[in-house]
Length: 163
Image (cartoon, rainbow, N blue to C red):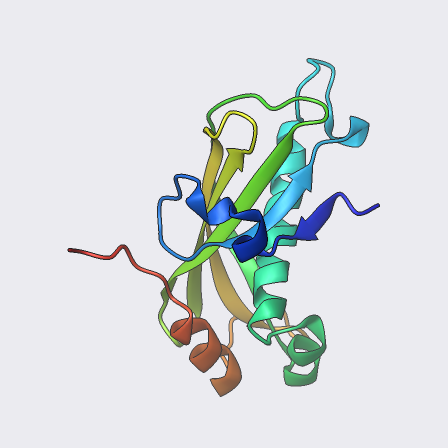
């Protein structure tokens, strides 16, 4: 069984959780023994691994896969994480993990926001922002986003709606 699975929001209604932004991309994370540390809660490194899974799941869902990255000799790599551990999570807990693209300069930079909510308590347990920079895979140096990156990522930027 997969530890993460894509959630069909309309069926499972995870959209009713208290998300910080509209229209989250959600992946469900089932906490297993592999995620637990010597304090008997989820290890901090497991959250970082889950961020990567959620980000890739979202990128794949909007049409940007590792295959396209390699074909274009480009990648979005992490420049900076800001991680906020709010409440501990434990074995057998289920966490709804959401991401949004909140900034894309259409050149080099992209920012994602993450929010993880316990489906049991309905409380936010973790938030993060991650800054990415576009690089050439072959050279490892910064390179402008190809049009498919800049168009796809910028078209999927989420902002807080102002009423």
